[in-house]
Length: 150
Image (cartoon, rainbow, N blue to C red):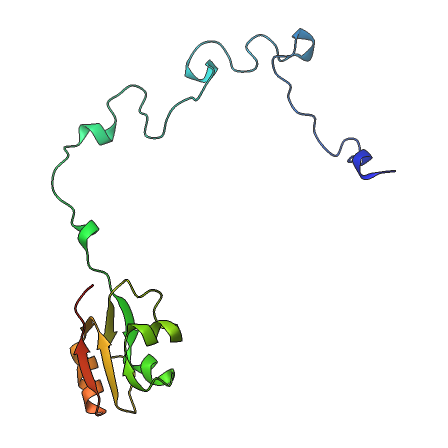
């Protein structure tokens, strides 16, 4: 007995339909596809959004307008509460936020939001601040510095 000789019990698996293998198989001739028509042909039956030769929807609709999504400014968000939870002290910028793990990359701008509380004074450097974040940082005796985008 070896692993290559293992087989399921007879009757446990249904035999596959072997089409186009002679008249004795019972699946010869049209190979169970019927006569004529799209489904009897070889090759891919149709592409995605193919409408059977009718002009597809994406070609019937007019192409108009402008989408500004490519140029949207996306910020990495850091909350004031996260600054106090991670025991950051002194001057806090994108470098220290990256080392602590609060942001993923230094190449994307950082915005500080005002959720949470701040206990100690910090000098926070970021690309943008919400008004509530500025109030909480300055209320704790800290400073806010806006960095220009690189």
